[in-house]
Length: 318
Image (tube, rainbow, N blue to C red):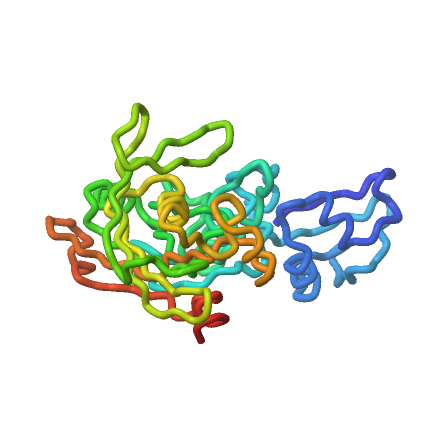
């Protein structure tokens, strides 16, 4: 329990508004709950959220210590009262999250709070499975990332050994990730493998496709299979032998059938006609092939996990 004494400068404020200023990490909804269940008292008695405070009032706060810390990128997860998280699979070592399109995985210059890692940490914190105040506690971390406007499965490790093993298996390509996308048009061949070279323009944050080796270019190998076509749109499954920046988007555009909604490599007229502003791309299936020893994660060998609800598939091919 901590006590705070109200000074002259804070006199006249409502209790709930004072708490939001004094404890910026405490979500307003949680503050109201704490007032209601008497974890916040004024002068030892029951308080009301709209109660006006007077100079000299003493607040008794039965609130976890972490909410008294100064806000930083490491503790902003505390401000998420109701984590927005769809769990595809979870056990004691890892969690597979279905990241929605439009959400960033980590904080960037445009978003600090509403990130996938913050929602995962808030979820585990509220389950009392993890607390940054615990001694030598491992902070849950992401093993892979996908673009803001791409949705799908992201792996979060709950311990250091899992993070090490999964990163190693991703590097050695022992995990198979499959994507679904919708293209404007249909490839000439219903399925195939595309081998090309991608050259990244750092200023434009865009890649160009070449069919012969080029200085600075990186090999990109993409497998695709058309699952269904309706009118000018095709539902395509993608597998990656390599994982390059914008590999799927650039490769499919080079085949003459760019992703629906892709503002960088796509067709503006088609995107506007369908009202789509995000590329229709989803990492919908993950298989742990694990042909070599995975230590404590060997139990995952051969297991596949699939996102059941892919928004654009349900919208256009449901």
